[in-house]
Length: 227
Length: 191
Image (tube, chains in turn purple, blue):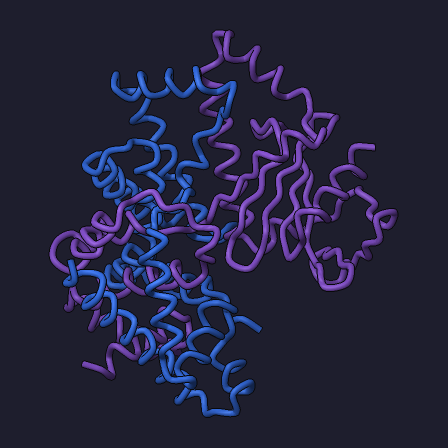
């Protein structure tokens, strides 16, 4: 069984050849415990990729124990999902004091009183969620040429490698959305070792920065983009 | 370079398209937790989220032939889940009430998306898992961390640690087994 479990671990990592995959699929199909193990690998991976200092505790310790208990004793998948993190939200309210907000808060306030309020809220969620998921899951999503010149803030651009902008130890990709994603101030998240910044621009577009980049650098770029 | 986890997804998707339900089952198990977590953030209901998760994967199975690989597989699955969630919310009086509440709060924060992504792993439990990983034998910890935290391929890890690929594979597996054992013993039985 250990040999099969080891192959399962390699399968999860995408490290089996086609013949081994075929063989393992047949085995997994007959063995429910192996299927659950895949979910456990997902859960472990999610836990490892997070930094505890950025994790917000929502559950009590008892709850989390119950969740883990469920993994083993009842509904494995659901319990795993309940503790899964794909992204750690680290929104910083101090952004609102840094004069980088745009007029979108007024737009949103107006929208709240309109008949389209419900749709606006729903669409905002949808666009933002889709956008974030694309950044995380689609390697080509951020590899687009853009018209933002960052030389004035000291960044070099390399078009050979997915339009990566770099300076010193920092490197990131950027993308500009022509549609409003429903955000009214800069938001940022941590995903694995990378940061995602969404910056509302004065002209209504939204700038996305993704990579190894500090908060202060993101702010500099945001200010530059808004000039 | 990191071996893209999409590689194995592509293999499994192709097999699933050819009717291999075992391959599809692996995909379901791999992505169910994330789909469920997403749906729970919309419905705030365990039962509704389970139902919608099931519906999502039924739709995924039914529409699998239309997946062309233009985006990551999970992105595609995620969209199906979101659409189902939206329809569900729109058709439910209870959920309408929730949306209205959300709109009233929108002046502060229109998006409830953050709620989805806010951590639900307890800090203490996460810390215990991380502490346990630090107690693993150095060889296991190194291989596992290079894979999970840095996304390195087995080949990369083999070069970095000057170890045969077979040994790398074994070390990563043993690290995972140890962590699962730890979670089972320490986070479940020690109330």
